[in-house]
Structure formats: structure tokens, C-alpha cells
Length: 600
Image 1 (cartoon, one colour):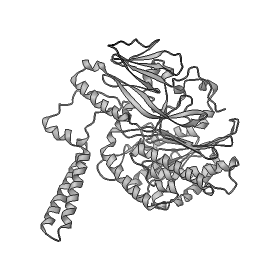
Image 2 (tube, helix red, strand yellow):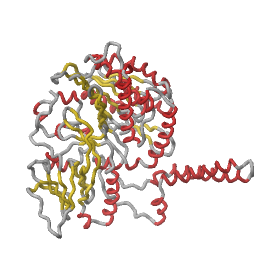
Image 3 (cartoon, helix red, strand yellow):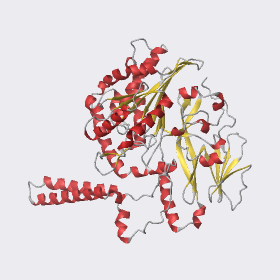
Image 4 (cartoon, helix red, strand yellow):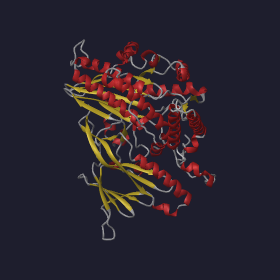
């Protein structure tokens, strides 16, 4: 049965936050009879209190309504309380409402900074600026009643004892966005305040019944333990005529140690790190997938030649040591076969994986919640960033599997397809296109490329122009803005998707991927470093573009006056020199606090 058993203690769904000069007090106001939580504004220490302190004329606190405590982050000298101040209900799942975080608030508990050194205060202030960015983290979702980190199939297999545990203890840590932030609350045994949060997107539409996709996320390349970047579990769930059907796919970065270093080129070179470790890292990654999902088919969409060719070759070679009856590898050169417009040729890929999909199936529950069929394996898709090519490919696989499910429960006839139902077809395309945009926006800062094919079923001139604009925007964001962002995510399409991604400091800080420290051997910033403090990549880019603009204007005037040829050469030379300087000294312009990755 899919209903969640009642746990011993419910999560608080609405609270009142009292901001006293010396402490924050979180008081349940949803009818619960539990104690209030007091958090010291000096050091972030916590304790339960039976009643809210009295107010006086000299002690008038600010009061606000909150809908959840996300957690507490400890930095150098202070702690920071993170709460949900606004929420939006986006639908229901297994009969329980699902909410999107509409507004986060980060509240400092840093009065102890008054006794800190000037250096500590400076570094703490820099990290506080990073946390301000985290308040704008997109795509955060939660439920007070059901576990959003597990697929329908894994929820279905939970034992009664597990269902009685608090939600945070049931959760899959990989997809728990606030896993690190909850540690202080867990240490203080504050279960009613421990609200699991995922990052991703939940998209729903109503046809004859509910249909949605849902995604869970994780970074580029892999670490030495085989945990990969931008790991996304996408679950497609459909509810019709009392039946519930689910199909899970995953995506993730190529699973060995590699990186791209930002250097102002459009496509930075790929660097393979410690190539001798690739077979071991790949093996660890796929053994973990095998344990969690069953059989695995790895579909590699990267180019066989050019810059991506080395990654493709190394991945293929490493997979030779892993391949077995349970784990298969298939390379499909997306760009060579499909180009930029012929995405219908993905049918070639589907023919190659159809036997795997038929053998490993999908989850199907009947009206009583009883399992009629289960999914025994998963398709793992990757390109370079696991966005555009992967989105198009996964939507194709999802469409075909949905048609199989609808035939199985008697909605479709033997030859009937989604294309036969224009409204259904349009809703399906929109859901998957929005899903791809959500992942892409959180990972790259722009909507997905090739989204017009997913949204319209064909490439359009407007879509191609949009791709050009978004590609330029990605170039700017990757080079000049992504140093202060990062993410790990989970998404659903009802059909549902959850996901897990990365790339940047603010979220790394929130998720405990890095520790903070003050280095004692850093020399004071000299007067001559003033340019470094003022300079920035956006400024450099604007100067380069300005120089090229004036060079172009001068060239257009050459036919009237040859002296403009000299001016155009001067402007072009200045632009090229500045671009070369910035590329050679790229890190000079990155004026960010230092983050140190903890040793495992």
C-alpha cells in the first residue's frame, strides 16, 4: 500500500518566529501542543522552552509567520538560521500536498563576532554575502507528510517500521538538499522541526487524471568514490483509472575525474585527471547504480571526435572492465547522427535500447496499491553537461515508455500513440520542455538548448535563434558569474522527476561540501592590488566588446578616410591584448572567499 503510516510525531506546518534581541524563538501555531524552540543569537545554540518569553516596552520583538526550519549553518564565528517565510502549494502526491519554497530567510546568530578578530570579521562578512545569494536558491520543494526523495517504487517497498520513522530518517541523503543544514537540529533531537527539502522541479497537468514528471539532482565529472556531477533521477508518474505507473531514468556526468577550467574560450579544453584511476572510479559508480536500480544501460551521447573525443574514448575503455549481463554501455554520437535539426533520428537509438526497456519494465500499481509490475533496471544518459542532448533523449524515452504503460492499463489501443491525442501530446511536450528548462536554469543559468524540439516536436527558426542567445548567455555566466553558485537537486513530473546538481560556492557552503577557515599565512593586500579589488570579469568583457565595437565602426569608415584603418587596428589590438591578459590572469579577477574541501 502506498499510504504512509502515521509517524510518532508530525512535522510542524506553521510557526511564529519571534526575533528577540538575544534569541530567536520558533513557536508552533498549527494546533500542535509542542514546545517552542529557542536559538541563541550569540552562538546558535538551541533548547526547547515551554513558553515564549514575555515582552515589555523595552523588549518588543519582531514577529513573522514561517512554514519550516530548513536548518542552521555554522561558519567561522557565527551561526545562521534558515527558515521558509513563504510557500506555494503546487499539487498533491499520494494524497498529500507538495509545496514550493517561495521565499527563504537567513537570520544571523553572530553576536559572538563582537569578540572576534578583524580578520575573522572580514572573512565572516564575505561568507555572509554568499549566503545572501543562497536566499534566492530556485526550485526548492517539500512535503510535511510524504517522502519526496524516494521514487514510487522505493516508497512501495518501505517496511512498516521504516514508515514510522521521521521523514528525515526515511530520506535518501543524495537528494536531501538540506542534509548538512539539519545536523544541528538532529543533534538536538528536534524531529518535529526537521523538514526535508529537495531541489528540482515538480510539474503537473490534469488530463483524464494526473500526469507529471519529477526530478532529483547532484557536479561535473566524478570524485574518487564515483559520485558524479549533475546526477539527476527523473521519475515519470501517471495516475489513471485507479492505476499508478512510474518510470525512472537517471543522468549524470561522465564518471571519472575530469574538468573544464574557465579560460574565456567558448568551449574550454577538457582535462582528464589521474587517468589511471578511471577504471576504478567508473566501477565504483556503476556498482552503486547496480545496487540502487538493478540493471544499468549507460547511453553516452558525446561526440566521438574533436574535444569530446578523449572523454568518449576514456569512458568507453573504462566501461570494458565493467560491462556484464547487468551493466551495458552504448555510445550514440548525437551530433553526428542527429545534427542540429534531425532529432527524429533518435528513433535509431530507441531501436538499440528497446530490448533493454522491455526486459526491465516499469512500476505498475493497481487500485489497491498492489504491485503488478516493477522496474528492474535503469537507463543512464549523459552528454557533457547532461542538459540539452540528454533532455531531448530522455523525453523520447519517456514518451515511448508512457505509451507502453497506457496500453498496459487499457487507455490506449495496440497501435495508439500520444500523437493521436493533440491535447495530451501538447501537455506532454510542455511538461518535458519545462522540466529541461528547470534543470538547465539551475545548472547553467539559462533555459535548455534544443527545447523547441521537445516543446514543439520539431526544430524551429525561433528555437535556433533562442539557442544562439542562450549559448552566449551561458558563456557569460560560466565565465563571470558561476563562481558563487552551486546546486544539488531533485525533480519530479507528475509524471514526477527529482534531481541533484552542482558548480558553485554558495550551495557548496550550504551543503557542507566545503569548510571555512582563515589562513594565517596570507599576506595583507597591498596598495598595488587595488586594481585586483576593483576589476571583475564582467568589466573586462565589456571593455573587450567595446574595443571590438569601435574597431568595427572604424573599419566601416575606411573607404572614406584611410586613417580609420589605423584606428581600427589600434582598437582591435587593444581588445585582443586585453582578452589575452584576462585569459592569462583569469583568477586575478575572482575576488571570493576561500573554500576548502574537507578531507574524506
